[in-house]
Length: 131
Image 1 (cartoon, one colour):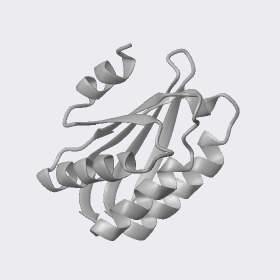
Image 2: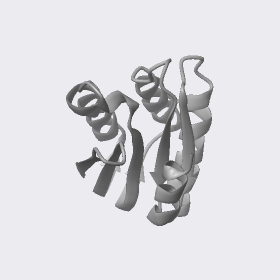
Image 3: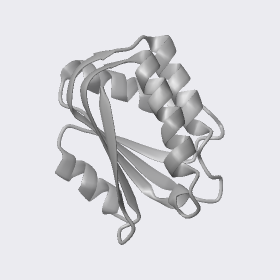
Image 4: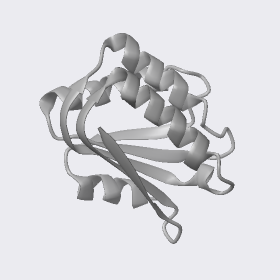
């Protein structure tokens, strides 16, 4: 699995693209690296995000790992900064995983991010940019 990030400072947006096969440990390691390398940079913590999984060919996750990903992700939320996260997925299985992730992430009281799940990246971009 490969992930790469684009940071658009003009629109305060971080877009992450994933491709290939993904498994639980890879996603967890990549999320931790993303928080350390990107979200920890001054100013970027208030940016909206799009995570595009539309080119991922296979996702291997359990419910337990989705909950773990959600708990790790919440740790980067800033209480004073409400941001959006759009997940773009193409398969039915990935859509179900993304919806579970959205639900689990919202159960943490520290969660301060509005999540949306989309099948088309242009829909995700429109939602993220909508005030």
